Length: 364
Ligand SMILES: Nc1ncnc2c1ncn2[C@@H]1O[C@H](COP(=O)(O)OP(=O)(O)OP(=O)(O)O)[C@@H](O)[C@H]1O
Picture 1: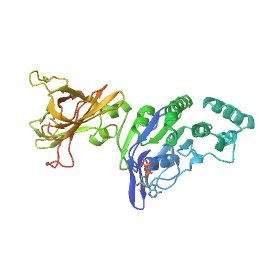
Picture 2: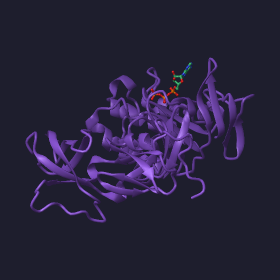
Picture 3: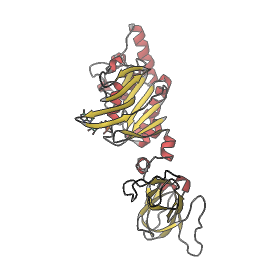
Picture 4: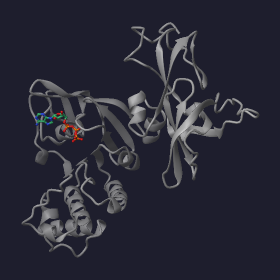
């Protein structure tokens, strides 16, 4: 997909989107509701055409602003949230639906796939006789049966019971890899994308804002919103002066930003450390954790194998969160010092409220 855009009633919902899928790889389109994920997938499928841009499959142009080859004439497998099985056809005929060739050839492929999805012997059942998880597996077998070059999946696990979901996701992933198709999977769940994807395309307002491996997207977010899509984040504000930004957690080097630019230091609660405030033996600054800042506990919650502690910070009264392993439930009002893993802190220019027009120091 190259420079793909789509307008509805004069409103652009997908803008200049470029994305390549690779055989054997799962690419997840991840983003909040309404950001244009399904529209992008529908354009890849040929359910609708682009307002601008092109779609190629195996080097062949299949859509641009003036023409659009329909899904059944592209080598794509489609799988949607509601599975959309044909209620009047049994499992064998559902899976065989898109197949051509001899009757025996079709039956062999159906049996092979039912076996792979763990439904051998289910061929003569009808969709209403199957559980949600079984229907999902039939839908997967049906989409894969014609050996599509590309599998397009729109929230294919969201209708499933939570307890089933993890196992079905893992098995689906194995089967997709065995088949070697290029997969585009739409989800709004960061956990699902992290679990399934080789590559995540993080979308916002119709655009891809970041594209990369899950680890990179999580550890090197492009901005505060990208970081916050995957977990709670803490934000500390500062102002650049002489190439650095001073904060209660110590200075951060910001040579790429001009003096006077507003800066956000963003870090995840998992990357904070808490210590008791002992005035007689204060926690010393370290290279790894920087300077500790003091606050008072306003809330502490136990969350299974970890605890979430919220502090009102002495320096500005802001609330910052720390996640610590095990049980740690200090009473409200307890003074604690918080420090953060500096290598996991991200420094971003604050574009919305900056007092300078262009925060980037292009001469640096
Ligand atoms: N057929 C349509 N006609 C008009 N507007 C549409 C149509 N389809 C989608 N939209 C609008 O385009 C925007 C993007 O929708 P899309 O379904 O692609 O988002 P999404 O990221 O997949 O959201 P969700 O996760 O909620 O499904 C939304 O504002 C939606 O209301």
